[in-house]
Length: 119
Image (tube, rainbow, N blue to C red; front, top):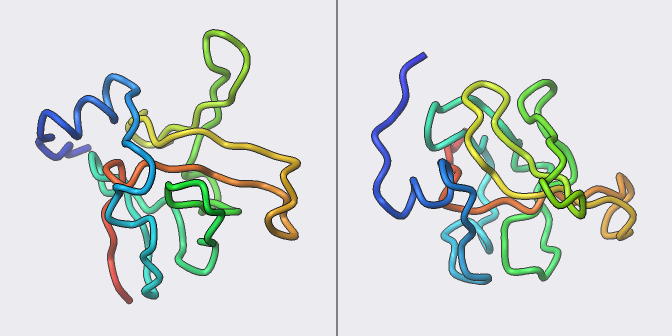
């Protein structure tokens, strides 16, 4: 698998499990039709049809492409981290039971962990 070279800011989030400040990411208010892929390995992660505005300040999705995202309990056991299933890059966290959509799931993803491919 080919991995893209990451900037220091990208590595801070993707490799070292950092986060962007809310409302600053390029894909927070982005609603074009396409596919969101992992910035590190370019594996397809999310479809634009599954993106919604949760008001949290980060891109939110209520579903992932089958098999693309792996869920990992945080060390403190309070949240569930989501990582790219292909390369293990940190994406963000997943929350359930908030009732934002009918699927009742919110993948809260750092824009810096994603790239967008229009279709």
